[in-house]
Length: 220
Image 1 (cartoon, rainbow, N blue to C red):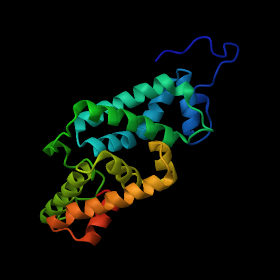
Image 2 (image 1 turned 180 degrees about the vertical axis):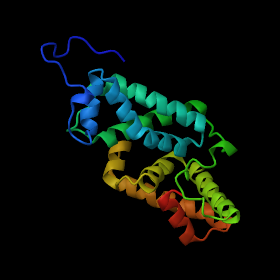
Image 3 (image 1 turned 90 degrees about the horizontal axis):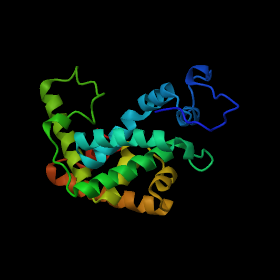
């Protein structure tokens, strides 16, 4: 990513190493990225790669698709960084909107959802402390995780994305509405309907309604 020419030639913009705020804000990092600062790009990537990958994976069920979308998201972010306007949207909203667009485009292109394979079993629960659990408990919990994941993936996209944004990523109604480009009331309605569909899909598998709510809410 080369440094752009012809922008504020008379004033040299500071690099990441010259920014003293700790931590450096997302907006400052993106501004530095727009000026060609490689260190700023790496810092922004490390800060948000798990978020971007998680959204793409939870929407597609495919590690390969999620990896491709993550790479494409950050490459695109580096190209359009100068277009970001902090007054119009929070950086997280801007980034989620970008990865959402790329994910939906990928799903439309593939037209089928990739079946979950053994390689992606631990992706949602990688940080869970399984070391102290017995093998039986771990296996039981993993089966629950897989049921919830498959149930989420089986939802129509308009319900799946609000479940992923609000229940798995903790976005508020207003931010989810800004990301999707709809009214807050639409997010509430879709979330209510999506949760109802999830309960219907999970209960026949032997998961109680209370357990289903808890599992989905915390993304386990």
